[in-house]
Length: 109
Image 1 (spheres, rainbow, N blue to C red):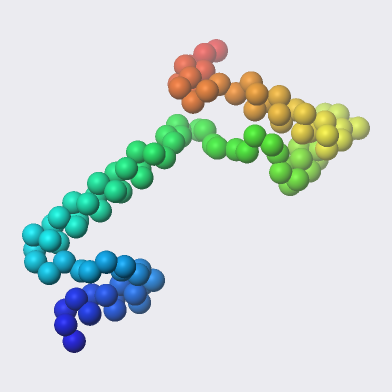
Image 2 (cartoon, rainbow, N blue to C red):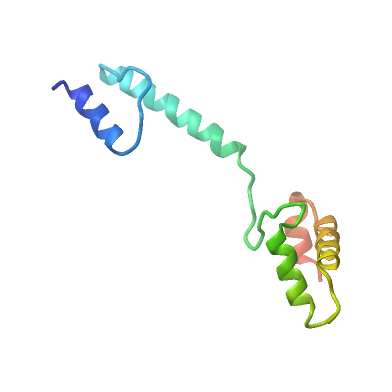
């Protein structure tokens, strides 16, 4: 078995499918690795940066979020409905500062 076939078999055993020919020389391997690193960097650069203490949430609450909001809200408002909890959630999301203001809003009193 050729070395490239052994590499392909090992990668496929890990669930990685190679759809392009494997490099045959060290120069080809270095060029392929450089391309992969550039692609990885592009993917990482396109991801949003989330500051510590922050979390991405949906603009619209899910049913589970509505139920939890209603349940927790009953401690303060015994007659709270899911629609009330949803309205409160939406108001909080609307009031959330944009990502570029994360640090300044955390520093505010």
